[in-house]
Structure formats: structure tokens, C-alpha cells
Length: 142
Image 1 (spheres, rainbow, N blue to C red):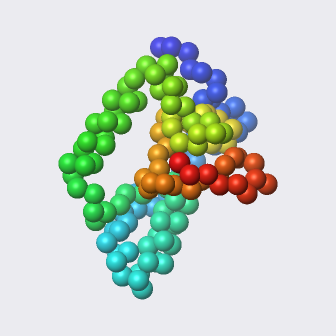
Image 2: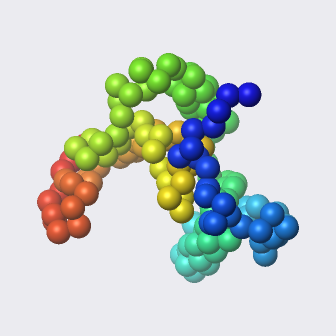
């Protein structure tokens, strides 16, 4: 087995007790997005999403309106991209100027996450902050 990059390893003093079992729901939260059509139910859906994020960090959505063939094309394209050599992925790396694109440096509790992401915008044009400086109130279109 290859050596593991130490940036992925939590120092022993920060590790949870190996016998620790977090208090979590037994099933991943499923959120029905068709409920967003009911103005009186929107706040409940938002609360459920927030709760799922806090307890699990993710959730599954149903009745989202995205056709199966579209989902399959997106999944196929994502697999093709993430299977590219690193040098190709780095050509579209996210940075302070380009806040969309490839990124593999996310951290949780100062440990590198075992994931790669590709951030995109779905509306044209999209307004984003012009920099990561919290004092900079500038915006730009992408």
C-alpha cells in the first residue's frame, strides 16, 4: 500500500474515541422539493435542509424536476472530468480571481478532505464577490 499524504491524517490528539458513535438519525434525510410549490411549506423545507446539513452534512432530494437522462449525462461528464490526469484538471483550477472551477484543497478541522470538486454557476450571468477579502464589497459577473 502506498503511503498516505500526511495532510489527510488527523493528529492523534484530535481524533475521536474509536468507540464513539455520534448521535445521528438512522437514515439519510430525504427532502421532497415539490413542496417548494406550496408557499406555506417553503420555510419548512428550508428548515429541513438546514437540519439535515447540521446532522449529516448532506441530504437526498426527490421530486427535483431534473430528468433522468440529464442526470445521467451530468454524471458521465463528471466521471470523465475527474478521471483526467491532474495536470489537465489544474488547467481549470479555482483561485481568487476565478471562483468557479476545479478544487481539491478543502479542509475539515484542518485536515484535507478526500474529495475533489468543480464549482459552477448555473445562471448567466451570475454575480459573485470580486475577491475573498471580506472588506471588498465589489461584485463581478461571470
